[in-house]
Picture 1 (cartoon, rainbow, N blue to C red):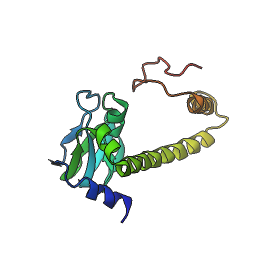
Picture 2: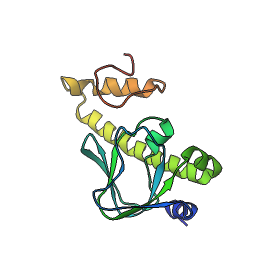
Picture 3: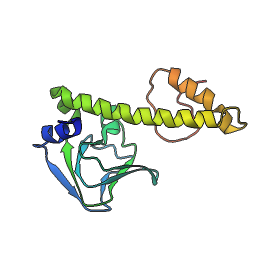
Length: 165
């Protein structure tokens, strides 16, 4: 059985939440709850400041894990784009601790997203290598980010660097 089908089997006893098209599952900036959802059927759009970042349509995909695992506010808005069913993990820390298979699949999904992001950034980096202006410093910025230890950051751009040069 594939890992995503396993996720659906392993979360079968969790409460289901039914969403209509246009209904918000998680709102950007919400800090009052830490649940994670697993897509069962339907489609979800992930938005940051109203800009679409991703469409999630694969059953077994986790949603809402970043804010939940980092203990901060929701980093994006998640909206149903069709009639959708998700299963809600109310206490993700205990849930993933109690079943390492689910924690491993979550890690795989996050690693896949990171790999795609890094491939994209690498492509952008090579396209603008040697450019003047703000795109020309991309190589330096990415190098600094990659070599720094993790810090607590606030999403957004208020011109206060989270990483010192």
